[in-house]
Image (tube, rainbow, N blue to C red; front, top):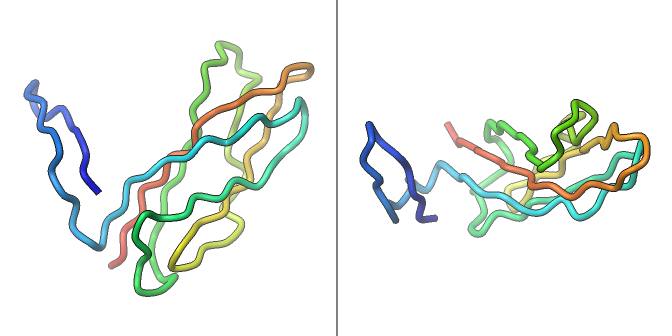
Length: 105
């Protein structure tokens, strides 16, 4: 995967990540108010197995504290990771982005 990063004020674009590191994102789709949903990110290229360390986050445009949040990682395979995301808003469906950084030691 190619990425863009700001390094000490200089933008470095399209540098390849090592094959043991993945930094990818996917839309959550709309998650209805007060409900949770399973969101699956399928890696562009899979790991060799499911033994990797993953850090996940979710972002949305909500300005309230009642927004999308990560509940937990439900499962992970070499090809994909499944994350449960909660919408704590009382009345609004919210769409966001699931971000995943995964590293195979």
